[in-house]
Length: 461
Image (cartoon, rainbow, N blue to C red; front, side):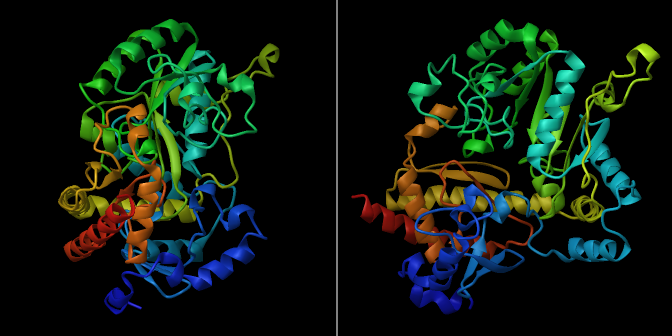
């Protein structure tokens, strides 16, 4: 069913258009918690279930078509089932899958990552952004001999215990804005982990410097997204990254740029090329594989050498290095997908296209919201951005608290009911354009967005 066929359904609530998904969700919830594979995919009253995807479109169990700007939370940069990637994957599947012996396709992929990324002299593969940041932090602790890490308040850097600190919590729990507390995100995380994490306020130079200097003797690393897409879209201001690069250099702290979200999305050299900053280590995932489970971390050769076991004397035979391993690391199918993706973006006008459409989409969203009179602050850079349901300035994490989460979720559902996915219904997420989107897709999405803004403006009068 095309969007054109659905025009008469535009005023129909999403739940009325997805009865098969509702029935399926009832059954799926008996199989897996919340009926989904990852908590972020769950929303009220139930998620719809995708059956297929092609180019910039998703199709659900009820045969509804959606213009997809969620793009799998970022991995889809070329479009779903892009032939350049699919063909390479099919070729690799016929050769070999995992063997637990090194395969050349993985080495060639990593070499391409190294050639394209300014900060990476040596690199290893992983299977998810969570694994990439976990291993990068371990290597940094090994290199420095220190145990603590620092991360920005509101920043998400994966689902391991060290990263799940001060991601989301009440103001009372987080404490003062200029000296935030480390607060576990969710249960099941040992309290002792919080003692090893130093949160700091993004875009606040004075507070950041004071906190890092106070903890410098114990700090192994600062891990930070170059743009904080973990809470929508917080862009660096007033040369914040230049300041942080100089400060970590002075204090001997490993600076890790978490480019899981921005890597190969904001340009062929990722965000570090766009901003002209060279961190000590970099993590990457998502867009590098156009939908396949590709991830990794890399950095300076002397830091990455921590993974190499030392030559041992008899007295040192139990001494080890920073361990990095995993049966699926360097999976040849994932590596083939990554190599195909990187080769395609090097040979085509991918960034010109997705950035131009990103400007058209996000600028247009601000304009139609202003026309309707809904208080909205749209933030974006290149092909990535978010709509905050507030007209408050958005410079720091706590500014995002002014956004109306319920209104955003309602706007998202109205947009989905009309055939466009502006990310997912969580205000702290973000959405994207892809190489497969066209100007017509964006223009149609803006018409849908305007209708959805009008609906929520009426609901919240």
